[in-house]
Image (tube, rainbow, N blue to C red; front, side, top):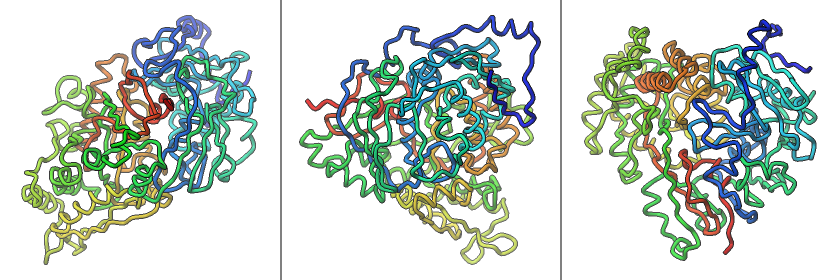
Length: 605
């Protein structure tokens, strides 16, 4: 029996025989696993509901990215990687259905089993699962992958590794992962880790491998060609092992997907208009309404499709780095929010068509309720009443301006807050008692023309307050490197959230991630209350308890004033060549890399 241990002490996990027997007796192999309740699809399901099981295979498409890339390894922190890559080339033991809040179905694994308390999870591999070179996927590959990712992989994999007590091979094609934490989501997360080839990476430097040494996967596509910084060609593997697996039926239908890279969004848009790009996601409602009227659309060669969804808004906006002044003071952060004239900026850039994000989980049943905290939410927050941000318990809402360019009310409120924080206007400049001018920079990627436009409008208001604010643009590689190291004052931030938030929340805003390079806790949240709400969310035994913990977390993050929210995207907008088709049945999560192009197909007729 092969065993991999993750704890530094290397101790053997042991339980008494009676408890082990009871735990095993309550676990039965199943085709899927859900966070709460049972999977919606039966064991004999044919395909995912939003995929066409008999979708034709064929066709070539080209998708466009901005910036460049210097790595083809999406599983390490080093380098800039084409973001789509890991969705096409690699697979995990289980696959996620995007038509349920959080449910997994068998992919590399044919079955999963868990006890009632979810203290462990077991998987049995499919006998025919194999890597793109034809070698079989073994239990040894799985054990190796979990240890490699947990030690040398991207920090997003480290949290799960720290909560694994042991991984054991339990049969020729089966294994068991035992946890050291009361966290019901871990059984699902364990099924979602990418599986790598032990033969390829054992004894090699995984974290610092050169561009040409990209990881081999089990997925439907392989990298067939690339030129650093310019393009990546993905070709569908004709010998793909999983084409008859129900989870894969009707997916990954294009013969070839090329990822082309452009200097910025404007150049990319022109390439799309010129026919060099097959599909383009549009996030600006006004641009969608006014600029998608070029000849190819008039001729019917390009189709505009709108994909609604039911997922939370997530958070998009300017994030403030609380690790250093002046943003370590909540009053300064609130002043920044008051000075941001959302109604005017939204009208100028989107025609006012897109509603504002009002909290991290807005637009969903998980969102904090308006007004003072009530019921379970209030009870959860009560123990932290003296340490949490103002407005958390009483209620917090974003300011609303009159839509005029001046935003006098917001500017007056910002000025008052800055004075409370020790900043006063002296000779037209905002200074503290030491005479220092309130100065900071907004770091932006050169490719993000819309964010630059937002920043230009915002900075003009901040300068009226006497601040010394600069917009600093950099290339994609430098932007990634600096944000990984939290080397910024303010920058743009986008964090998508699901209907079943879980362990990833620690990586987004848990205290341990605040100073962990490469984490998504860009704002530097280090709050015992936030940590406690995440813990309660992960240990919840029922839906009501879970929702209360998420709503309490939403209050803490929103009232923490870490991000100046922009507008939300209530539907996906995709312009695409007429040959690209999709099913009339849409997933509740709407568009995303697991939707377009994964379940679309090519129809030349």
